[in-house]
Image 1 (cartoon, rainbow, N blue to C red):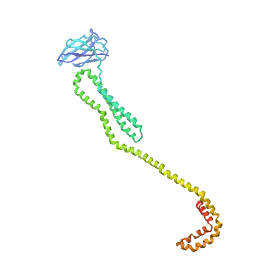
Image 2 (image 1 turned 90 degrees about the vertical axis):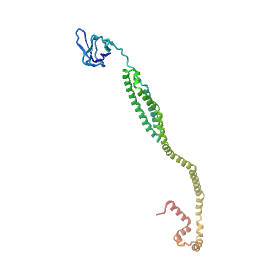
Image 3 (image 1 turned 135 degrees about the horizontal axis):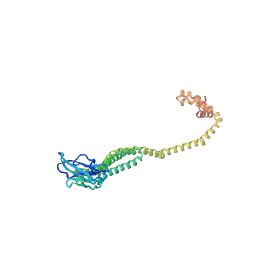
Image 4 (image 1 turned 135 degrees about the vertical axis):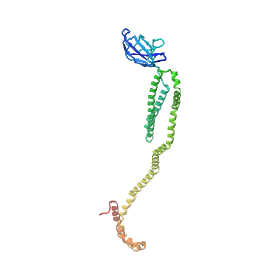
Length: 336
């Protein structure tokens, strides 16, 4: 670490200056030289000055005429900052104050607000993403809004850090009052921007509310489609148990009663009827004569009747055998 040297109160005609130092005043051979500097420039010597006391400042005008040539201005200390006063021709140490801490609270507020909004939409995205379809489809636009605010907050935070760095460098040169006067218009514009941003949540909410209002009918349509099938199923289910099933049970009960009656009454009667075969054979010839005399009178479609006459004769010849053969055909199929 070296030292820093600048000049103050230079003559009006001063154009440039030179600074150098030697290890001692007996053998003055400069060991470090600043070179010619503009009158407003400072010499930042980066090396260790090693307690050098033979320090020289040389100031000249525009015609290279020497205005000031002063030697043995030391001592200088490592890390020191010094000013050569051209009026008093003395080397004055400068108390180095720590750099001011600059904060821009309004930028921090903006970043914090953007992060809060981003977190809000991220929580909404996580909640909606766990819903069932089709409502889970709302998670995608919520995630887009979250990412938008997240990136805005990130880049605005980078911008805020840059602004703090710039502001810190500026206040090292100018006072806060000077900066405020120079940047009053910018500050006013920043506060106006902050007023708008502070209401941005409401603006964004209005945008979302308008979108939701427009999408309400669509969402209601989704709900109707999703519930219509369940409603119809419930109606059919109720109708089945209230109307159809009682009808089925009544029909099955009647059928069961008829089947029971068949096996209880009809079938025994049929079997007992077959026992009348002997009696029937005795009466068959009398019935046949009666049928022969009346059949043409009763049946004008006699020709068609002739085609089935053999079956009729077979029935009246042996009703039991005829019925048994027909029952066998019905249940077992006709013989090949």
